[in-house]
Length: 457
Image (cartoon, rainbow, N blue to C red; front, side, top):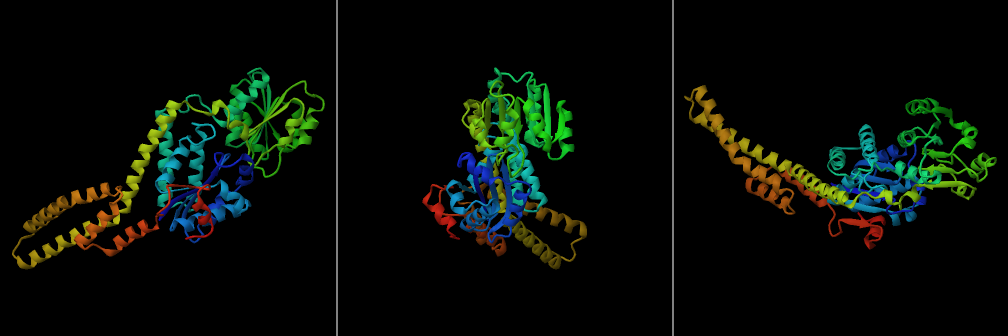
């Protein structure tokens, strides 16, 4: 089996394309399940955020797995494969592990070092567990990534400034109000994790009137109570728009929440005298891009956030975080390799036990006068001697498993001790499923990538 990542993010595609790839409602969960119906996919986890969609999969064949995942992603999003593939990246085995660790640590985020991604990975894992699409490999990978992400944030200052997509967006918005949001009036559309973060930061920034509009009124009311605001029905947002200085929208809607005409009508009595900032953090977009043509209206979306200085963490902390990730990747790969040779180790110990039991049986037949106490002590001594003898080879086998020639050591043990052939067959099958002759990173710019998507298996 081979660990594989096929993904697309703000680093490989424009926000306009990510907009079309957004997996809303239960689309991510459905994609995870549909992937298991593919010929080569054994496990799957889908990570879908405001700036990335990634499929982590355990596949029986690398080339076939890439094709299966890409076709499923195209089907789930409705984006044709020929539009999708130029922006996809593919990573496998050690680079797949490294990628997930970096993503969960915030190193690959639009705002480097942000912590929200840890919660998003945790939610993706929980979804895959609930749907029974995550087996041992994906579970172990995601659990390790969550642990690494926490360690990076604890041991470095990568998030010292507390930056997030929301905080950077609100910092940009404050510039239109003299650098502060103190005393301003805000409307937050949505009541999910991102909207909750926005409402909390608006409150901390001194916003005096916070209105929460959500499709489910009860959820909006709960959030409003937490930030000392008030909740309204989503259908009534036009009633409060004329009085709003800043609007933050982050819903899972597939259509526009606010059109050009909606904002134009709200601004009709205001003109360009008072500024209005619209922060659209949704994918797909909640607001019409054309509202920026209206007098006094500024629109900030995800594309605008990617280039601001606040999106970068201190270089020293980034380097330290990458060093931690590199150490953790090596440790995880060693652990995976040890698990891969476990059948050989178990077979070796089983073989040793067989030899001991055969010898004890022979002694019982040859020495029938041996009393029970002596027989028990003899058996204990013989088992202890064999266990001591087996200890070093089995420990070394697990250590050497991470070596490029680890499988050859395991095969040598099999031949030397005439071990269970099924154990070696399992190891050989795992090695043969791994891709060969390809770089550790395959991206859409590589000539081989089109071949992969052309159906090679």
